[in-house]
Image 1 (cartoon, rainbow, N blue to C red):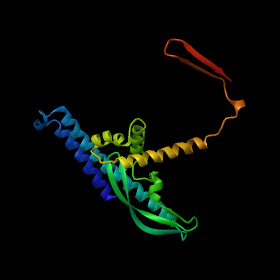
Image 2: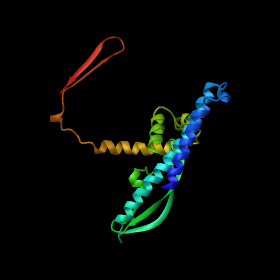
Image 3: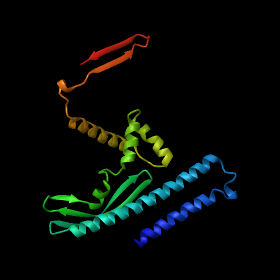
Image 4: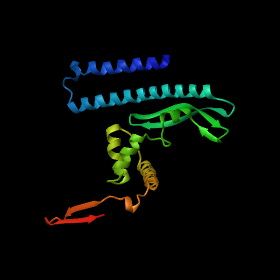
Length: 204
């Protein structure tokens, strides 16, 4: 807890210094775009460290809760490190691994508490890359993200993320219940043939 409080205080100090430095004589003649990038880079760094602090906080609570509930069926397998690529940058953290003898499954309390993705990339990054990949090729889908955040996400990684997302879409539609024909409503579809002639259909 002391370490967390110290980190939070350092983050507050860094933010205060950013605000203070914005109005110093040294920045008065800087181009506005350079000031924008200075603010962005500083805030991204603060965000990454704050997110890591949050992860450590949730991890500690989840593992303490697991320890209280632990019995002979839950075997503590020690600490294991995992990477997490957030929108603020890459983070690595260690968390405890448990083996559930009754279910014969591996369990990470911290991962479950935070609903961590199975993959390295955050759901936000997966969403951005997948959305961009629908309109362009895989290489181009990460160019803007790499340029803005100074990351180095590869074309192959974008392809893997998009393929994974496409699998989830099919699962989603397969889980939807089919509506019986007799319960369907009345539909009216209207359109134009680009010549000003209305085209319509009425279906029950």
